[in-house]
Length: 290
Length: 121
Image (tube, rainbow over all chains, first blue to last red; front, side, top):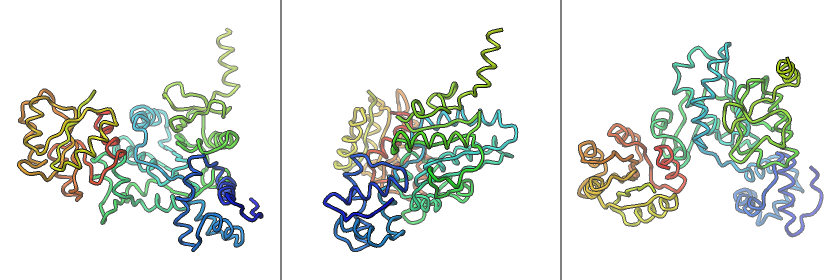
């Protein structure tokens, strides 16, 4: 991104939008642009500037990487909650995880939570697996959770949540079992934290994912991207999936029209699986022909 | 439409809870203490009870302990909703049969989430 022009009236908004797009691929909706000033107030205070245009000018003049990071962290929407969309976790518990349990003969389960925000999704999955520890004994379970926000990943990795955080989606039984109250905060247990590898990573320049994942969670992420960027993310997810992988997106998000690689899953409603390759389709067609 | 009985000696809390619950398409009735709640449950059992802990006449915990022997058409789900935010209180409530626990202050999303967990919405 080139930051060259002096900010004009409303120029700050355009400059911050351009910075966010170039560093994260995200586009600001009208709604979020309206909230930009509120989101940036702590950054403005910390840097002793009066308004967004002055902040933009400082960003241009100093090319300060830390300031850029602070602006990006402030603009990213880190809204998340435990067991968000309960029916998805119910399907994971009743259908998808048992399916992997039945089919993965090597007893390895690999999960990637892409765009994990402050980690509630990854912790929710870890809780589900730990609550059924007898079934998963002897398995190697790898949960990779990535997000472009350094602030979100720092919080996720710490496992520290507010009272409000733990009341959204987390059943009281799981709160008692897996969290420890420390002052006004709730700390995730070491057992949960050990299960998850949190990494700051960019979906457009990925460093963290490796190999293929059985379960790919990329929920409420694509909605922030342009159609072209959505296609790019779905191609990345396809490269890190295999024929039996399951991809879960957020409510209102779809692969349809954005991906040649994924299709609605035949068994798991709302989930997506890899499209059969042309070779497999050809074999099926020839069998029917006979 | 499912019914929620809000049990709290604070008129303000009852009003706030009613506003949120009605926005979640629940019908709402109110009780000012545990005994009032028990009487109302015996007259017509609600689907869910949102229960304060500290109240005059009969506390939330006393209500919960009396519930198994009350003459009810069906046992309502019970969500404690209290300023007693210590882990010992939370564990005691769950052991006494509470289905969920809300630590005050609460907001719409918290109540919606807890009602969803107990299967009321």
